[in-house]
Amino acid sequence: MKKIGLIFTILIFTARFGFSQTSANSDVIKDDKKAPVITFESLVHDFGNMYGGEAIYEFSFKNTGKSDLLLTDVHAGCGCTVIQDWPKEPIKKNKTGKIKVKYNNVTVPGKFSKVVTVTSNANNSPITLTIQGNVDQQYEKKTTPENTNTTIPKTN
Image (cartoon, rainbow, N blue to C red; front, side, top):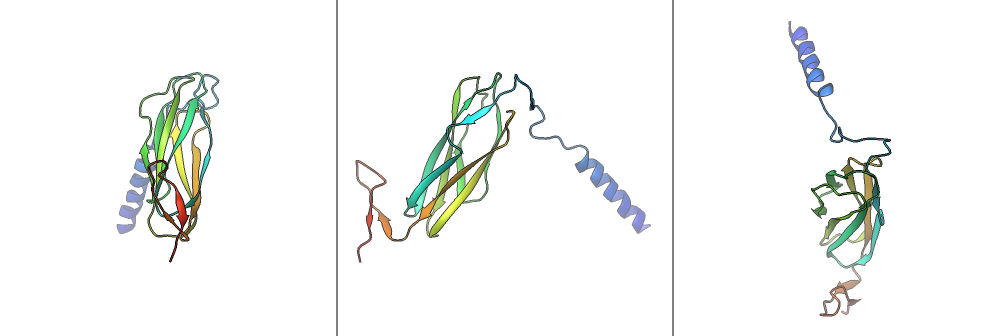
């Protein structure tokens, strides 16, 4: 009797979660000439040498397709990367938008490469964006009114 109950449970689970799921992009018009196309100015941003703390970058994109572009999900691959802002409203054709990404690093030195996945109703969805750089312990950040990213070597 326990085997029948287990088999029944597996069948219910499979039917519920296997066949009834809909894609987040169920309204995507793949391979349609009238579909939106998301075109980024750059898919990779290199912060270069960083000196701890945080760094922010805005990825700019344009809807180069024929219909409205709708971003359905924008998420980072880890907790040290935060999506601060992204358009929730449809982007008309030939209009632009920005995705604001913040990288937090307080103490971990070395090279890093983090990904952000952008899912939309575009023909070319999903898109993977990358932020990268190097956290260098040999420098300390100095702030001046003219340039908030001025750095000088540490002195002992």
